[in-house]
Image (tube, rainbow, N blue to C red; front, side):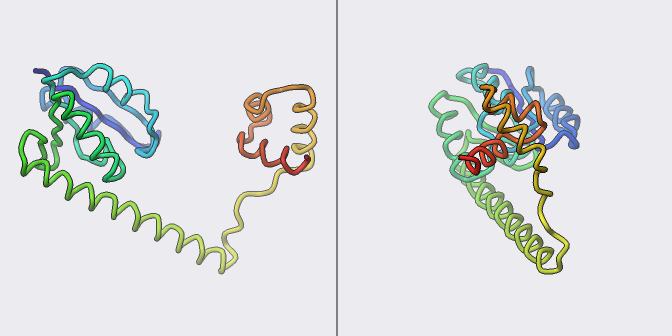
Length: 183
């Protein structure tokens, strides 16, 4: 039975150092990490963790919001771990899926974490709406006619959408939108 850790931060401005130190202090023999949004399901470190961890291991995290962003995600993960006979423990919350009370507490915390995320989104949308009314929020500047012309030209030369976006330093979504307007 080994302790395996997982750490995650959402942005490159945040540091994994504190989480990694806590996981090392708790006795983790191996630690996987990601710098990505919790809603991103294709996190390389998480995928590597799930490939590495074995039956009888203990998966250690600092907080539950580091591994799952919604109650559904967390419940699915806990079920996968249970089927593989892996225990989930959180250091900053009295959680361990090795007991019924730990599992119940885990579920309650997940509900509150998802509630907090939804409240934060609502506040953000309210702030954007207020800024729009005050004339302080106008969105991003529209793409120049020069960029629009270059998109058409590169597409006509059979460049891929990804190549066009990379070459012009715009998003793939912007390329698709421009091409749809042209057609």
